[in-house]
Figure 1 (cartoon, helix red, strand yellow):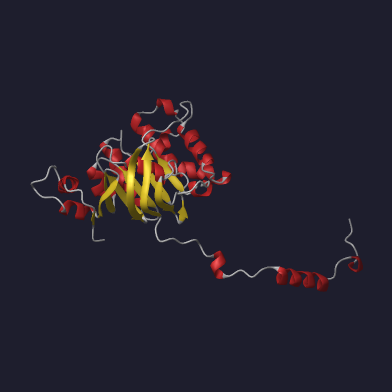
Figure 2 (cartoon, helix red, strand yellow):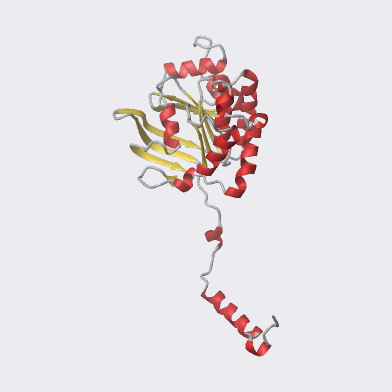
Length: 293
């Protein structure tokens, strides 16, 4: 087909005039409009209350601010650690106070779909289809987190490599050991490169070598994300965490560095290490304490 004669086409001058009119009609965009969203803390709680069940207030008046880094959440059984993690994951709704994640309030009834895309969560127990392979399981979780379809294969491969399951990626979940299932759970938690990563007892079932590798992974993740690790293992906190949050009876008992936690105890306190003795000392005297950081 021959091109139309110039006389029948819009002239260059007319095209330029149309473009100028469009530019004038477009609203001006300031630098503030395109600047990335900023917030003081990735996680901020003020007077936070969260129920476990219908009546018990498992988190009761918590004030806490957490930024980028690895934060160890310690406390005895029944302290409210899992309830707090579930609230941070937007699984449980606060019963009172304020909770902000990545600058967004999560205390109301609104849907937090966009926020959940930026959160990684490993509960103590998680479900999966036993016939799924590791790769299929992590792919499915990436899809649920709305990772762009074109990005899923690469994201899944990186996640399984980071937890040391690349050679088992095509094995069925039901054929894995307990420790390997736990590592697959960690892979699904990090597949979306979350800005907030919440891990509830992540080292259960891991052997000593796997726990060492996991500590290294935590340190990597904590360089640009807010990582919260609930654990009973004080040595994991000492090795991987930039600070410690000690939790008891739903309240903050201590927040500071591992060195400050160790300094809180003495030879008269129970424990095999300075950190354990500091832990025991603070639980024996549960007045809220802050570190100096």
